[in-house]
Length: 114
Length: 116
Image (cartoon, chains in turn yellow, purple):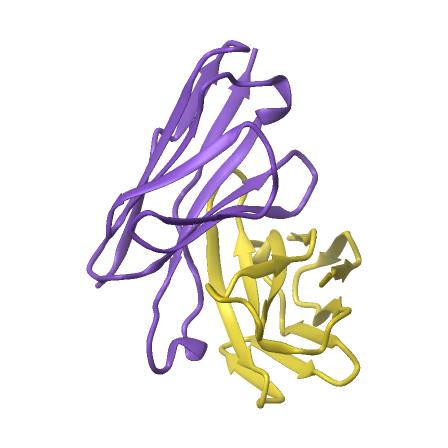
C-alpha cells in the first residue's frame, strides 16, 4: 500500500527566506506527483504536477523536483512571503489506479512571518 | 472553463441523523469524481471514486455511501451519522482521455460537517 510522508509537519520562517518542503513515497510505480496548497477551511489549489518521466516543474517562485527511484520529491519556495502561509500537501497517483486515485501526505503547515 | 460546486459549506447535524452532500461539475463531461474526508490534524482520505454514472468504488468501509445519478453529479450520503463522521469533506474531479496525466485533480471548497 502506498504511503506518503511529509516532513516537516510545521515550519515557520521569516519573510524573504528560501525554503524546502519534503515529500517521500513508498511505491515508486507512480504516474505523477502533485503539490497542492490548502488555506484554512478551504479546498485544495493545485500548484505543480510532475509526471513520472519528468525531473522538475517550475511555476513562478515555486520549483518541484521528483526522484522517482528514491521515492522523493521536494517543493522549493523562493523568497517566501506572508501570503505563502498555508498547508502544503503532496499526493501521488499510482500507475495501477483505474480512476487515477491520489494518495496524500499529511501536509506541511507553513507560516511566513512578516 | 470548468468549475466544481459543493454544498452546503457548513453543516451541523445530530448523531443518528441522515446526511446528503452534493457536488456538481460544470464545463466538462465524463469526469472521474472523488469524495475525500479530512479529519482534524490529518491528511486527506479518499472515501469514494467514480469513473462513470452508477459506477462507484469505495476505498474505506464505513456507514457512508456515494451515488452518481448523473454524469456530473456526485452525492455523499449516510442513513445515520456517527460522531466519527465529523470532518471536512471535499469533492474533486479529474479528466479522462489522452493527456489526463498532465491534468491535476480539481477540488471544491469543501463542506465542514460537525456532528453533535
